[in-house]
Image (tube, rainbow, N blue to C red; front, side, top):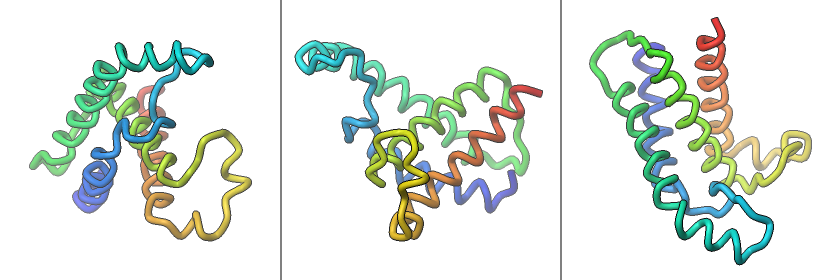
Length: 135
């Protein structure tokens, strides 16, 4: 990843990180029953959000480094995959995406939004990290 790509990704991370956990669509839901899920959220959400924030902070630290090139260990790559997924959830929530098949239903106005570009960029980076893990 060259310096310019890192700067772009860093800007995306900084833009989306504050929205982590704001939208209910970005949260893990364990129960269909709203009362049970509310109880689950009350106990698990702080820890889940702490782990998500730590993953994203690790990505941010790697992107902010002074080295033009950097290598990720397998553990670091897995952290990146999780962090990129968290950020994609935030971008998707901002776009109003809440189920599979949204690509076929998206209209021109969605494709022009900055969050859409962020979602696509994060997906591309995530795909490359997953491919590197598989090789």
